[in-house]
Length: 219
Image (cartoon, rainbow, N blue to C red; front, side):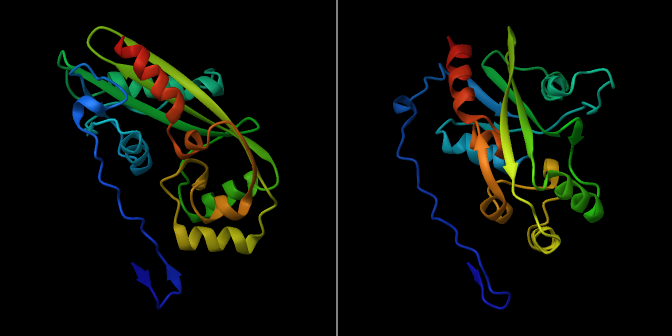
């Protein structure tokens, strides 16, 4: 649709209906059901784009906290596993649960989801003109085994002006995103000068690594 009044044009690409029948998928799920225990629309979109069928169930009892002596780069794995074991029910024999956690690390500071607009401004000023790491961890678990892995991408922002920061925050309201930005939004187009590693990992799901790990998990 297009909102003429604000001058903001929202182009939605028509969703391509998958022509894939169950037996023609690249990955043979061997009658396993995949449950994505995440409320993130980006994770749903990425898993769906990989032609992997799944259901979403976000019921969880896990309290997202960690001790101060946990090495920063291990926090996403800790939280991803915590979400897995905090799932609200036992898994059935044919189920594989997928949980995930994404963290933005700039120097020694972990940037979570901003508390409010002022906090988001502070975060984007911290990220401006320098590199940071985005670490996404994923846990695969069934009744017999679990596998947790994490992937790191290095992201570099140009110097962001105050007006660019406030425009982005007020137009896109990225308050549900770690580090107060989404790479797939306006700020990514105009502000990210360089990226080392997986783009989709920065969006919140390390797609290519997940594909390999899921195949190995199913073997």
